[in-house]
Amino acid sequence: MNLDLPGPQAVRKLAPGKLVIASHNEGKVREIRALLESHGIEPVSAKQLDLPEPVENGTTFFANAEIKARSAADLSGLPALADDSGLCVDALGGDPGVLTADWAQTPTGRDWNLAMRKVEDALAAKGPEAGRDAHFVCVLALAWPDGHVEWFEGRAEGSLTWPPRGTVGFGYDPVFVPAGDTRTYAELEPAEKHAVSHRADAFRQLVAGVF
Image (cartoon, rainbow, N blue to C red):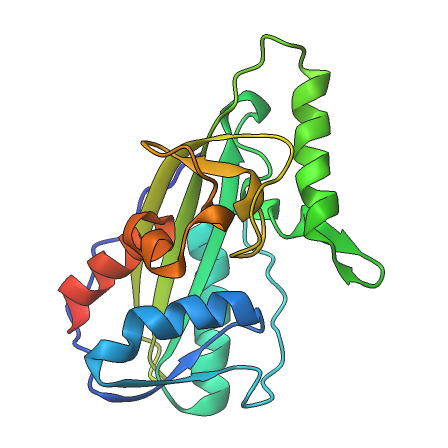
């Protein structure tokens, strides 16, 4: 999987004020709010603005993050920040990867318990020798209404466990154990997760670049 940046990063600074968080995932929005609140930013979610969810038909995390950020910036007239993130399992060739959310999709919405079970079943089908190394990737795209975009990539190494553990967090958090810990993301307090997560890694780069 090629996760190289699509081009040289620009150096435009983000002024204090309103910033659209281009997501309808409330768990993700909460995490992003917590990471931005000390920088004079007033986050407003795409859901609060009743913005539609664009079709994410990119083949990379970078492409999907840009699709969401550009759409929100165009429709709102405000700078917009989107993230595209996913779980990449080494033994599954990087899957579910950019299809991370698709593995949770059902006719009535997303079922993350189903998604975690799909990953576990896919690993079981590989046999007892299949490794459980995995990593999370987060790519942030920051877009302005004039079309300018910046990208930042974060990564967190770890491994998968089963059965799921913990009640904090969202998505695949209950089965992901970050490197250097014995607890899953879903067993960490929010502040602990923010210190080690893939999203926090990407945000550290964003903060260093645009504030």
